[in-house]
Amino acid sequence: MAAVTILNDLFFGFSEGGGLKISWSTNKLSCGFPSPAQNDTENKIDLFRKLIKHPSTTFFCIVEGDSMKNVGISDGDIAIIDKSLEPVDGKIAMAYLDGEFTLKRIRVDRKTKTVWLVAENEKYKPIEVTPDNEQFLIWGILIHVIKSF
Picture 1 (cartoon, rainbow, N blue to C red):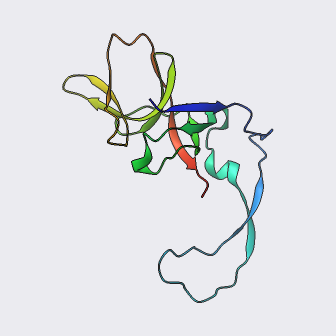
Picture 2: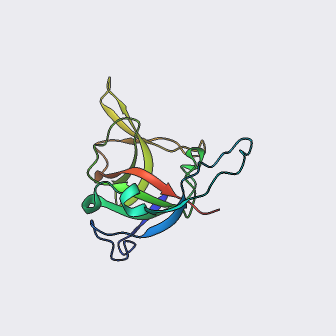
């Protein structure tokens, strides 16, 4: 089961009213044919405000493993999790299952009222959540992933 490591101190003293402002270009970045040069006016973007809508319920984790690779989530990526969002079918969630944290897609079979935690890698079988599981909690919903190349 792929794990996640919670980074309690990753906020570096960010506060709801503050943040880290980084230079950015107002030009769009084309992934197709390059466009003619445009005036590149530099502005500032507050990544904290851009990425975090609910600061008091949001935290960062480091992803471990490859169970979510088919949706572009890789080992070492930083997952941003929001605990205030409702866990619904189809969302990717950080779950606590029998003593371990894991990042998986929630699948709910309404007919059988069964909850599944589904990896996005064919190497891993879906995990059925049953009454036999001693502990099960959806800890939060994935809202962003930060990755390095």
